[in-house]
Image (cartoon, rainbow, N blue to C red):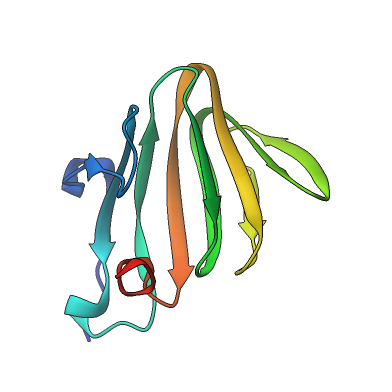
Length: 116
C-alpha cells in the first residue's frame, strides 16, 4: 500500500446513511483500498442531531466548529483539535452547535460493512 495524504478537497461528501438532516460523510480510505479501517471526513450543518448505536469503534477529530456527544455516561463537547472516542455498542447522540462542524474520523472495522 502506498503512503498517501488527504485534505478536505479530496472528500466526496454524501449524506450519511439513514440521515435526513445536514450530516455528510466522505471516506478517503476504506475496504476498497485494502485497509482494515475506514478514514474520512464528516460535515455537520448547524444544529444537527443524529442518534446511533455504534456498530464499530469510532474516533472523531474535530477540525472546525463544535460537537457534543451524549451517551448514558454523560455528554462531552469537543472543538477544534479535540478527539472523541465512541466505543462499539454504545448508543450516542451527536449534536452540532450553531456553527456546524467538520471532523476527520477513523472507524474499525469498516462502518459501511457494519451497516449492511
